[in-house]
Length: 163
Image (tube, rainbow, N blue to C red; front, side, top):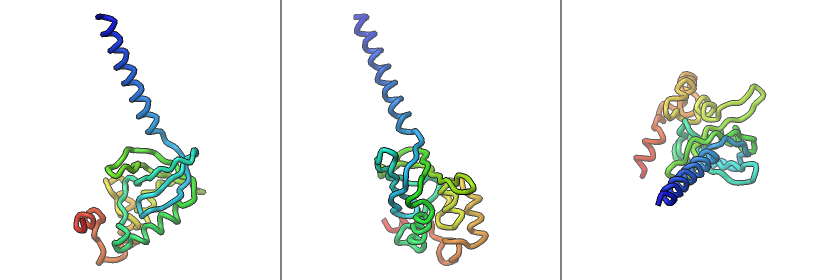
């Protein structure tokens, strides 16, 4: 009886550690090449093993493709990362089964945060407050979405209104 109890405990501990190790391994940073830009905040990254990762960039929300500036946001993101090496810092999975991740690219001046750059250019809105300084800059200089006073509808309001 006691052996069964200990075997049960050992089995549970092994299961716990395997699950923990699997989750930890899934959350490891990696690098890859951006092979496709779907819109202003979603990309496909091919890792070193040629596995394809659909990634929703965290910290920003770009206009939907059907919204004003949606196509421009996609073009900005393409110019910024398509075909380039990208560092991926996974943060989780969203309800559409996309990886949520912070993306960084190497430039001549060092690594830059893709979300911050997109917001700084006025191609996306700050989501969550981390990049409020970048958004203030874009607003102050009337860049991208901030250049048109008629367009101020945030993507999250647009999605609510159109769904």
